[in-house]
Image (cartoon, rainbow, N blue to C red):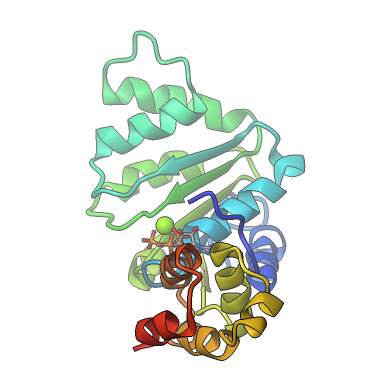
Length: 232
Ligand SMILES: Nc1ncnc2c1ncn2[C@@H]1O[C@H](COP(=O)(O)OP(=O)(O)OP(=O)(O)O)[C@@H](O)[C@H]1O
Ligand SMILES: [Mg+2]
C-alpha cells in the first residue's frame, strides 16, 4: 500500500500528547518512567498507519533509537524477544538463550531513551510480565507505543489509550479521490460525484474499505452506469 497517509491530524496530536505530556495522569510508572501508549480500534481502521505517522515525526526526540516491531501472530516469548532484539540490539552473534537475549536487551534499553513500537500486539498470554519488566526498566523518558484491537489488552498493560475513531466523511472522501487518482471536478464533469459520495459513505469510515473501493473505482473510470452498479 504505497498510498500516502491522509487526514488523522487530531489523532496524531492526541497520541503525541499522550506520549509526551501525559505525566500528570495517575500513571503508576511515575513522571520519568517508561510510559506506554496504545492505539486501539477495529481492524482496518488505521492504527498502524497512525503509529507510522507518529513514528516518523519523533525522529528529533529519539533519533535512531526508534524501533518498530511487528508482533502480529500470537507471539511466544522467545520469538518476540528475538524480534525486539533484532531491531534494537541488532548484533546478536553468539546469543542463544532467552536469558542471554534478556541481558543484552536490558543493557541496550538502559543506555538512553528510546521509542519502541509494538505493532499489532494481540494477546498477552502471561509472557508480558517478564518482558514488561525489561521494557519498563529502560532509560527514563522512553516510550512504548502499541497498536491493538482489544482495549482489554491495553488496559491490562496499563497503557494510556487512544481509541481511534472512524475516519470522518471528509477524510474518507479525500482518501477515496487520492486512491482513485481522481480530482473532484473530473467526477463532477462525469456526473459521478454524487454516486462517489454515496459509495464513500457506505465505507463506514474504515480506510481499508475506502482504499479497496477507491482503487477499484480508479481502475474503471468509466461510465455513470458502472459506478451505479458498484454502488449497489
Ligand atoms: N490515514 C490514512 N491515510 C491513508 N490510508 C490509510 C490511512 N489509514 C489507513 N489507511 C489504509 O487503510 C489500510 C488499513 O490501515 P492499517 O493497516 O493502518 O489498519 P489497522 O488498524 O492497523 O488494521 P489491523 O488491525 O488489521 O492491523 C491500509 O491499507 C492503510 O494504508
Ligand atoms: Mg495494524
